[in-house]
Each structure stands twice: as structure tokens, then as C-alpha cells.
Image (cartoon, rainbow, N blue to C red; front, side, top):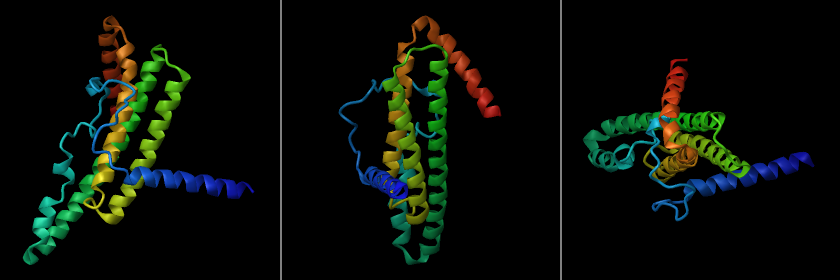
Length: 195
């Protein structure tokens, strides 16, 4: 009986993740948990800061190369290289999720008040982002980087949304303490990266 329940639960989770994988998010969500103007450069994010995904993920150059028979080998090498770059970018996004989680823990550990609901929201957003990134990695490895363009864009949006949730706590910090917290976080982040 327990095996059936676990199978049903796993099936529902997989269906939800597939739904997330194929959903198109061309426009930002109407309701966001925090304002979009939060400066998260202090959090130490790297991959989320890429503004033009079309340069990284666009297939225009690949189609041009593939259209010429004499450049077919070059197009295949281009595709393999682009897959490797996209997989590295997805790994950086996963690292950004971990940094955001540590940033939020740092702020909460510094005494900033949070509600249980906020914590559950951030934890579930982080879990969904990590699972989605894992699924997209597998899809990129199997299908290639050009067939998964919308899923890759959604992955970036999920991590951006998580950064907004994590950074919303920073807006509650009084201006007098913010510089001190930012400096201590920068030291903490340097120590994490050195380890």
C-alpha cells in the first residue's frame, strides 16, 4: 500500500515538473512577492545576471551553419560546444540557488524577522528551482541546447524569482545596518568561495 502511495506521489510530482518544463513565461508574472528593483548584486550571483539569453541560447548561427553542407561538421561541433556551455550555465544557476539559500539563512541568522509562511515559500521555491534545473540539464543533454530554449528561459526565471523572494528580506533592514550586513555577507561569501 505504501509503495502505491509513493508511486502516485512521484507521478504527480513528475507531472507537475513536466508542466513547469513546458509552460511558457514570456511575460513576467502579474503578482510578484517583492518588488523587482531589489539589488541582489550583493548576494554574489553569477549566472542569473545574464541579460541577453538569445546570445547564449539562440539557434540562428547553428541554423546558418547547418544549412551549408560543407559546414555540417562545424555545425555539429558548434552544437556540442553550445551544449557544454549551456550545461555549465545551468550548473552556475544551481550554484546561484545555493548562494541565495545561504544568503537568506545569513539574513535570518542576523536576526531579521520572518514568518513561517515566508520560509515555506522560499524553501518550496528553492526546491522547485533545483528540481527544474536537474530536469532541464537532462533535457539539454539528451535533446541539445536549441530544442530546450523556453525551458532554459524558465529556469532562469525560476532562479530570478527565488532571488526576489530571498532579497525581499533585505528590504526590511534599516539603512543604518544595511552597509554592515552587506560587508559581513561579502566576507562570508569570500570565505565560502575560498573553501
